[in-house]
Image (cartoon, rainbow, N blue to C red):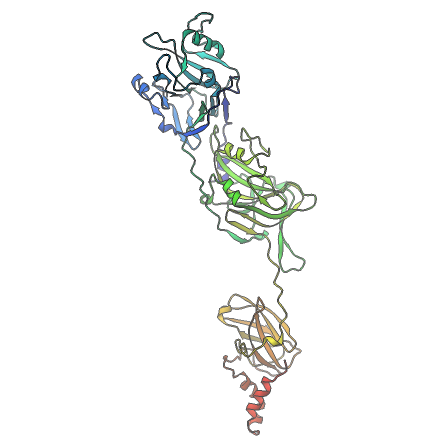
Length: 572
């Protein structure tokens, strides 16, 4: 799904219109509940018999053309231009005889005050209250009370003339009257009762969407219930350098997934950089300066749905701090949503100020960048109010923003996504000590036993260390010969000091300071080539003897053994 295309679907402003807000009387308190009913589940009646059979369910009037539903959407059904929808749900009062207790005891005035309709264009829509009254011993009289949903008054129309009785004046058909005057006429004619409620969409000039209808505290939503919290967790973890964060123009067709900077105005955009510590051995964090927002966008199949409070309860943490003079350091959660009374998918960004401890919870004040009807844009309020206004929604990313000044961010974690913008300082490894060089570790590395000062030699460390960094030292006094990456063959190459000679110890340490192994080496002019190394057999001493002491061994009995002992008693 392309972000630009989703945003361009915004074509209508939704309205939820309440009869009480338009001047009706206060309704009797009725527990509110929601019913989900896609348009395909509304019964289509075709004549008086089927209408009577299904009257107390949601049904379309049997008048031909009364089911003008164009298409089902995730947040309601659409009605095409020039089409008609006449939908009613009975309340079982039609089955109650004169003088009997009503199935729904709410008065007509109470019912009228409880009505509301979520629709994108209310101008061609009326509320409908069917009424029985004046039973003559054989049958009820019937009228349909109607009021334009968009009108801000409490004037209604009766579909039938209601005769004058007593002090009540006649109510002429198809004329507007205050509801109280119509009710007085009905009561004068005897035992009026509402037998249902509904709405009538009369040939709108353009397509509109009907999302929900409320009557008597029960809201019917004309779409399938949003799925239970679907919460795919992130799997991306680890260090992110500024060089890997790409810049993306808002509303563009560019890719959205991954860490990126959203640019609203290229001329005004800020900057971001990975900050290297003065010691040079680690990255302190990501500094964002000026107006900028950094978002970690999700792939289409990795977007949590309807689960933000749960995710926040598990923990959304931004480990960072605004620098002096900065403002607008906030967490951001961009979402797509299907709001009632609006055609097409909508987009907004939810924001909350990053607190001192960095923990973004559902209890903090949150704001929406977009007007959500009941929740004005950029107004900080309770998150539950925002969630209710969003309807069905999916989270498409998370991140943070800076309005002005600068903030340094080290880590961000959200729903399994764990990003670090900082690296740990290099561990402080104790300096090697000659006492490290024990008989047990001698010979666990190998190199040429002799070499010229300043020569480059190859040390066999072992393939088990391939890809790891090791430190090489030469003793007597330890001298660091550098940190080296072990090759796939298990070797490193080092340059020997040009100012050293004699017999020394060559040692290799792991990054954590653990000794891997050591051996003796003799530095002498004309020494062996760097590649002339021996297997780890302990024969290095014998090779050393071959450089001159072996000649002496032909004269002095046991000279080889003596020479060997002398080497093992070398001064480190």
